[in-house]
Image (tube, rainbow, N blue to C red):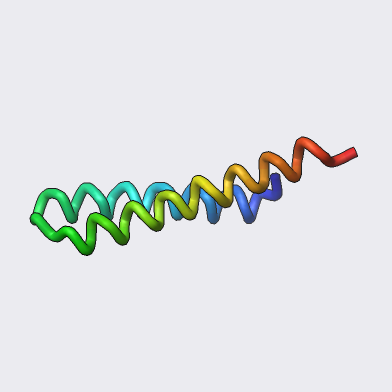
Length: 57
């Protein structure tokens, strides 16, 4: 996993979790949903990089 992609994945995950929590706190369903999408994007990016690493010679 490249350091740059790993950082992007973690950033998306953390930003998404924060946005989800803030959305729940203030009762904003849209913000909660956006945070969930962002978090899942980070999860997918991280999974993609792990698969790429597994197949590297």
